Image (tube, rainbow, N blue to C red; front, top):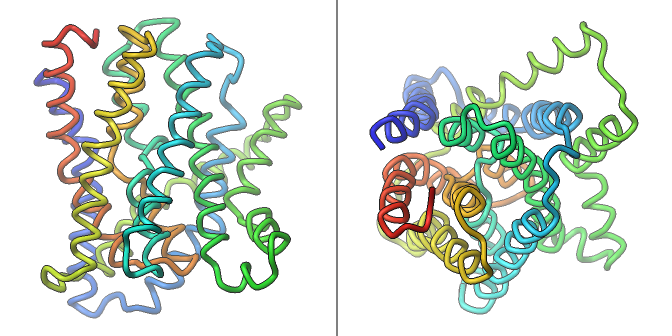
Length: 318
């Protein structure tokens, strides 16, 4: 349990420190709003699509393919996404913040925080670990696809053009293009030449530091106003409601042991850095996104460890 806590801290603490560096840089005048604006553009239009492409095109999407397990994870993520979206639209007074609230509440750090935790839990297991990584790959595609729909629907310019405008907005999303390109390369068996693979890896490496510095530059405390209430609720949904409800539903449907552990991890992860960048670039509320990212990263080491301890004590997890 201590090892799990240490890994959680070691995985999430660099994000927090980079954001604090961003705050310091902004206060010192080293970065400004222009840097943050164009930094988010570099990440959204180039670094994240390339990272997603790199993650998907190299994944073995056929290994330990468990259709019922994967179907549950995909169906649960889609169901939770639409449930939060509908409830937010019904009860939030500030409709302009709905997309940012929803995006922050259900998007998990699948590609950055998820894999190290799976490795710790299932290191050396020739079947369960690949199964967990495959789940990460598929949920990554689904999460970006659903988020693209969310922001396209809430984009006034896309709505003015009707269903066609919304669909065009989704198709033109650079992250969706990265997903489709990764799937095409994967299914066709294409591999990148060495120089291209090195370039892709280098571009992928800037996502975390640049994004979190931009997050820090955008962080501000406005007091306990309506927006802070949205932040608090979104963090509660992300770290408590989503994982607990996922484990309960999965348990009732008959999932046990390692399957249930993977489901818990996938749903208990903090908000994804890519979710904030997508939110910032597509006209979302950067205050909500940056704040939820920081709070969820800071608290997730504690909540993840707590869930492992409690569910193991109850005999639910391995």
